[in-house]
Length: 176
Image (cartoon, rainbow, N blue to C red; front, side, top):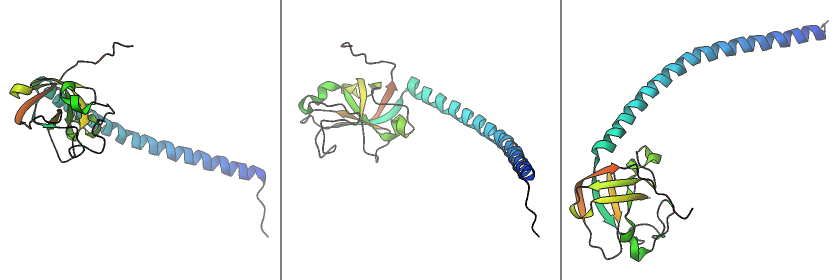
């Protein structure tokens, strides 16, 4: 004959099972916590190393190839008057803006050290040295390269060993 469990034994079994699960879970968490802490330390060391490398680029500059592009659909996409950050431009006045497109490896979203809106100083181009603002992204096939936005009709140029420096300049809208 099968004997029914009374409610006290069922409650005791549930409490015992819950306590064992809690005990096992706490031990697993403690064991994994040690592993996580060691991984966190390794990541902190790597981040420090990467920050130091980025600061070197800021201070010394990074060698890049500089080319130019026109805001026309065969060189951009179907909306040449809208840059990657959403900025709308007048195509015929493109050279007046002093905007650049950067290769993806330089942008923060792909592990780089620049972001849309950052100002950079460009040196080593003779006629194109100056301050520019990052507003666009180049095709993924390019690495360590920037394109200066130019009005249609500007003759193509290329500089193979220019230096790119990030500045701490910040744009403030005076209309606010």
